[in-house]
Every structure is written in structure tokens, then in C-alpha cells.
Image 1 (cartoon, chains in turn brown, yellow):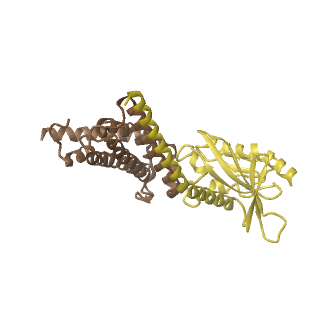
Image 2 (tube, helix red, strand yellow):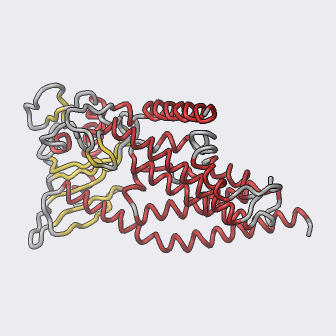
Image 3 (cartoon, chains in turn green, orange):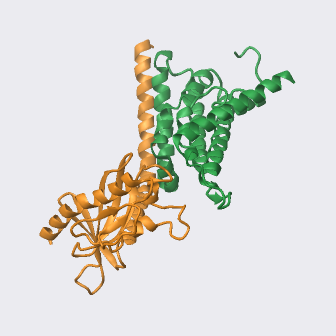
Length: 204
Length: 195
């Protein structure tokens, strides 16, 4: 991998589109589907995940030569779980409303395969700087999709965006959009749109 | 160094450090989390009781009862307590306020629920009702508890012990009433024998 160094900008940008965790790699779909019933929930979940991702990436890339190969997963999970608990307690202490809205999905960041996947595929093989850039790109790509998904579902399902009234009284909210089927429909269409854009990009 | 020994040492150090980080972070956040929980509890109590100066907490047979007291008045303003039971999709917990004689309800507030968004969630707030989004919880104000609360469908309640069901969420509406009916008798008995 490290034969020809990839420019840092590329490490960062790949998370936003080419290797986007949700649209391209389909990682971390459980929180993606579960908490995006409003834009603010999507944003909060994205930020919490990004915090955990970057913090774990720093520690794991620092310890990559210390942790024996045989127990690496156990070590990674302990480190990730530590940061998840820190994030969970932070939300409960400083942003109680968001903490209640996200419910059990904050502790469940531990098992988000996006985070473990990046540690295994990237941070355990790269230096601290590169791992931070990678985590930042992946995290922003995750936030980007969660906010888009949450916005579409909130506008159509509650006629609001970030809790502000967007559509007038003439609009009868589509209840299905804030229910689980709305998450699957919207995500399916977004992934399809992503693939369609990618196909056209290659042709041009 | 022996491979096995290294594995054990590295994992032990990582988990010990993790424990240290978490315990120190917990001591920072714990008072704030408890403060928010207390604020939420106070808000719920003041929502369901008529105005009072302060409240006392009494532990009766495992249930916490909050007694709203008015200064210089021996008669409490009302009694609040938490009841819980299963709704349509999961647990519903409700703060209920009653007058000191357990004759009628002074207010209810749903604290936890995971009912169907847009239908069952109207037990908390109904955004589709522009004149009064809180019509469902508010119709409990003053409802008489004897013989028990009843639910009526598709009509305006005629009797003082009736509330109207939410159309499209009859099961949830009935669950709220059932949870209150099921628990109130026991709390009334243990409260009255304790006081």
C-alpha cells in the first residue's frame, strides 16, 4: 500500500464520495436508517460517530506497532467503546434532548462497522496524520449522507427542517417518511442516485 | 518478550487506561446528568399538579409519590406519581397528578413512549390539531376516577369519567387509560394507609 504515497488530499476526499461509507461501502447502515427521522438527529449522530472515529484512529495508529496482531480486534473494541462512552456521557450531560432522541443508538456506535472497518483497513497500517485525515474524510462523508437523509425525511414527513416550518399548511406530511420504511426508501433512492452519478462521471 | 505475555500485558494496560479515562469522565458528567434528570422530574411534577410551593417525596411500597404542598396549608395541593405499562409498541410511562383525595386527575404527562409517530404520539402532542395540540393529555384534567376512566370513540365524552380516543390510535389511547386505571387503586391504598 505504502509503495507510492497517496496525496493527503486524496485520502481526505475519498471518504466524501469515492469511498463514501454509506453510499459506496454501505457501512454503518443501522444508525443511518434508525436515527435519520430528522436532520438534527442525523447531524448529531454523524458528529458523535466522527468524534469516535477520529479519536480511535489517533490512538490505534499510535499503538499499531504495540498491539499484538492476535488481540488487535479486542484492543480496538476497548478503545472504540471508551470513546463511545465518553461521547454518550457528553451528550447526556450537555445536550440532554439530543441524547434522548438518539436513545440506544449512541452506545451502539461501538458496533458500527464503519469505525472498526477504518481501524482495521487504515489506522492499523498508517501514521497518525494520515489516519486523522482519513477519519475526518470518512466522518464528513457519513455526516453528509445522514444530514441529507434526515433532511429529506424531515421535510416530507414533518414538513419541517431543523425544526423550522418549511412547507405550509397545504402540505399533508407523509407519515411513512419518518417511519422505518421511509428510511429504506430514501436510502435506496440516494444510493441509486449515487450510482447513477458515478456512471455518468466515468463516461465523461 | 514472550508472545502470550505481551498480549496479556497490552490488553491489560489498554483496559486499565480505558477504565481510568471513563471513571474520571464520569465524575465530570454525573452531576450534570443528575441535574437534568431532576429538572425533567420537577417539570413533569409541576405540569401535572395545580400550583404548589414545594413538594415532598414519599416512598410508599416501592413507588415514589410526590406531594405538592402549599405553605401554611396542611392539605396538600395534589399528589403526583409515575405509572408505567405496555402501550401499542412498547413501554409507556406517565406522570399522573391527582387531587389529595384521589377523586379526580389534575393532569397527566407522558414521559416515555415509542408509539407510532403521527398517530400514537398524539398522546404527547398532536401537531395536526392547530387549535390545541395538547388536546389528548389535557382532557384528563379533572377527569373523575370513580368508578374508573373510560374511553369513548368518535364522540364527545358525555360523562365526567370519560376521555375521547385518538382516531387511528385507539390501542394507544386505551393503553394510557388502562395504565392509569390499573395502577391508581394500589397507589391510593398504600398512600392512604401510610398517611
